[in-house]
Image (cartoon, rainbow, N blue to C red; front, side, top):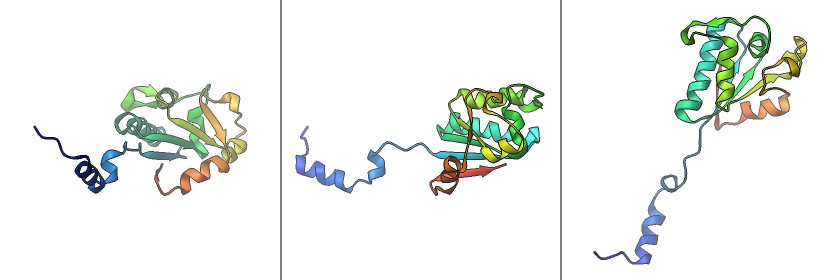
Length: 144
């Protein structure tokens, strides 16, 4: 079998779309959650979990308003029946797979929630961390 001369190989490579040769970048997704309803919050967290697991997305969950209750180490944790788990366990699933979970600092302040009250891996963050994620046109933002 004859091999192609190097010049022809380089010309063919130059004509190929760059995307075919480069490693595909993982999609980035932000899930904004403010609902205190366990069905809504459970769906949002399950979607975050699924996007990380099934699409290998880089997922960040941002909690605000009523959803902060789902990030607490202690206290009541309502059930999310579709997964047969309480919301604390659903949140832990999201954390265990490597997704980032942030809490809006203004919401934490308004509800007197401190870092030590949160599940390990969840951090209270300011607008300096959160706003660039929301403003980046390459990042998909889902709001619940």
